[in-house]
Length: 421
Image 1 (cartoon, rainbow, N blue to C red):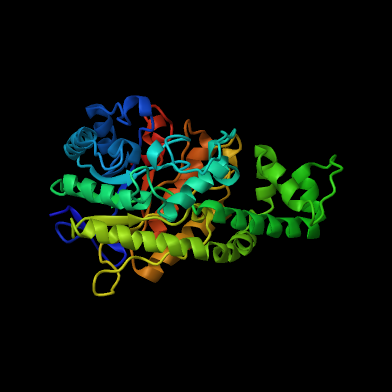
Image 2 (cartoon, one colour; image 1 turned 135 degrees about the horizontal axis):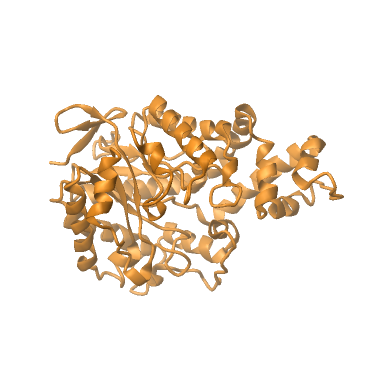
């Protein structure tokens, strides 16, 4: 019997009591290490001392299925070893099938054989995540996955993914310390993202054109740049790729009402891609439930919902047509300055919009919400520690569970002080 189940918006432990899951991510993205982290007994003891009870543990399709239909059980056995080590310290795991830019050919995730780019070449961007928005190779690889394009063996790559999950669930079925599965990290729409970005930049462009003082602040008072509707997208792309200018632009939307007015209507631009994501979640739910009826399924929103865009995803249903009763809504939440040199400039208003939007989805679908990723402060300064404290208080008020991102920079990080009781 698994350690936790869900009832409405709450996690319930084996004693029937409501429990909040708290912890962090452990994700080894290093292919040279075969995606196996150098985690030790002392690491799990540290997490126990901080009062954590949960780990979002990263695994990779590239490691699980290095060749079509060939599964690496030695890799899965090492994950099981970490589960046993964690259990000694009161820490449960849920496994996160991690990807960044879809593929191990670009960052991490899918194996090369499942990366179908139709001749597009990947070019690395200065900030790795910007390649989601600029790389035809990355976007086409996602399109190929959503469309179940044929792998070298003739079978669809999404079909392979579903079958890989069935094998993985069967492998861990008797490990009660592994409480659930996060079936895909930050699913990205593919080329449909370009429509979203075009609409976003158009809305921002109209705002700047009608607020010339804000436009001047973004470019700097000495700038002679003239923005028109015709050149707005080009100029906004330039702004977006510059950390300092992007920060100044986002400062124009540092009030809750203004940010919601910008971001909420963009949900209409993700309807079609969210239909594909909903269909995928239904198929993967059915595959996993054919092996394990008890395990929790963690479903994420699409990539853009990290910033507060409302999700259109329809939760998967059971065979009777009712919503699966063991679902967890597991979105992420980052201010748009994450991973940049301007990450001291988080904005409480934007963070409020992000997490309150997640809360609305969880309430609408009566699912517990566990924020799977947040934070990401590699060497937290005072401003970032203050921000983290604010976010944790927000989670408590909203009734959220959470797993901080991530352990790779956590051992000697001042951020630990935020979690110490």
